[in-house]
Image (cartoon, rainbow, N blue to C red):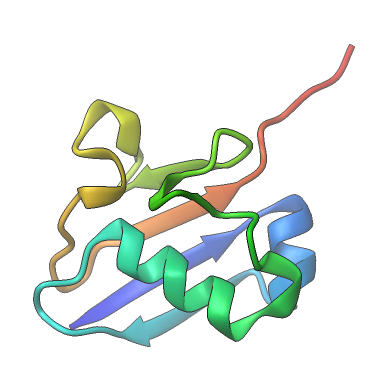
Length: 92
């Protein structure tokens, strides 16, 4: 299945692209995708997952819905889903 991945701020800098589409197995979860990204991009290692859960310093939206409102890192994905991955926005 194909999943669209969109990256923002420091995550985008680490990946080097704004968006990519990747193929994953049918039973893939958000955790699986984040783990693959951490393994593929050294600058993301340890940034996306904390003990198998989405790190508190990262926001992950699944088709526009924050994964904490779904099944967190265990949220299952289907073909055509979109994940947006960004560090939290701060400012003053």
